[in-house]
Length: 126
Image 1: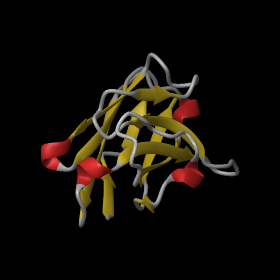
Image 2: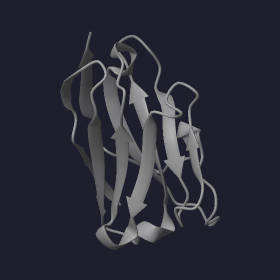
Image 3: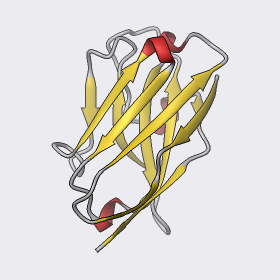
């Protein structure tokens, strides 16, 4: 499956952005989806995940209550709505797909994901 992330940009602290990740090549509903991010000099970290059926969503503590992950299987797209952005959210954001047989699970471990998008830069100014 090929993943194309978009929607990044420059925003002031307190602002919002919505990232999109469009998938092609395989049955999108067969994949749990995740968002990860990597800031300069830091390791890639989990942001959010959503199960194949969209019923289970997980978030890192640092974004819980501010970010919302969703998916629209008919459009082969997963979204990350980011509100109340902080300078600490500045990073390259990656979407990823996990070909899991479990329809109600979304992993927080990058090792579980089979496919990755190219990343989109999010910069939050103070």
